[in-house]
Image (cartoon, rainbow, N blue to C red; front, side):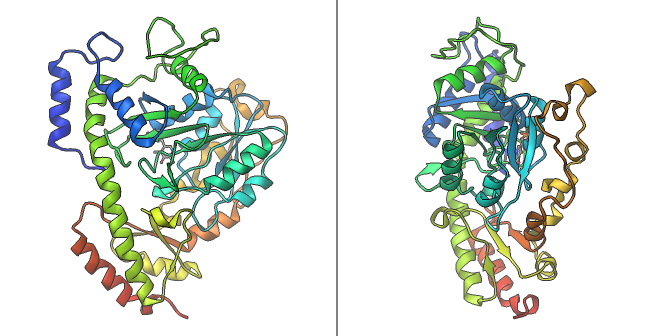
Length: 386
Ligand SMILES: *Cc1c(COP(=O)(O)O)cnc(C)c1O
């Protein structure tokens, strides 16, 4: 969660003083500037700001042409927005287990592919990158689209790239809990002009008269929604973006400190990470639930199964296959019967039950986090039987 303060307040004031709250006018510039800065910072060709991360997912799926009859692979551990976005465009979500990295398990991913699979949405949960090399290799073999849900990992590196800039498309969220925080907001990322042009079309009703830079929609416009961001959001985003890299640096320092401290105690199994050299998220895996529950009593430690809104067993609308109208129900159009049950991703439930996330305390002084980590490692013997 990124802090919002005086600089954002002043930036919004400036946008109001300029008297131009909507983008796409002769005077607007805040959203445009943010998009080009974010594109160069993340090394992606195109950025389209929208009003939520959920809409960024819906817009990406629509741009990629995912719809009725398609199956979309999503992890069993993510926010409800990921499977819901698939349903909104008329596709059905198919749940894939996570492995100990807390992200999509490439082995289960391959098992879940059918002739009807169209796209994969790997989710970089809690600043933990997915195994993108393996996922992209599988996607290429089966000719599937990859839309990275990067809503919880803006600014996080995966090897020599940034999460969200690796697959066909990527999405960011700028809601209150994310690395870039303006209350609500989101963005679509892509390197492909055609996907960008289709995303632009979809996010602004599909009406042609507005210029969005050098977009080249060579197709006939299609009906879309209004997901546009406004200039006040753009102004805040500009300030928040300046804070992203320093936040990642602070997280990285705290990660290294915690890692060496906890390794010293010899009692902790740090969850495997898909890019250890750039890790900015730390999870500890225990042999059983019991130790994880005990460890979660430390301040700033959370057992993943307890933050249960991210666990598929709590997605009632998905599990019960409910749409807003019976004739707009994607499960009716699926090419085979799709059934969900509570134990369908038992491997995920097992891992989430015995894994804890440690809040690295990016906003606390390093020294305070050092003493916190020291206390944790000293008391480890009470938690873990060996
Ligand atoms: C936050 C989040 C979203 C949706 O973002 P909103 O801006 O809240 O709509 C999607 N996926 C994941 C994994 C998220 O954490």
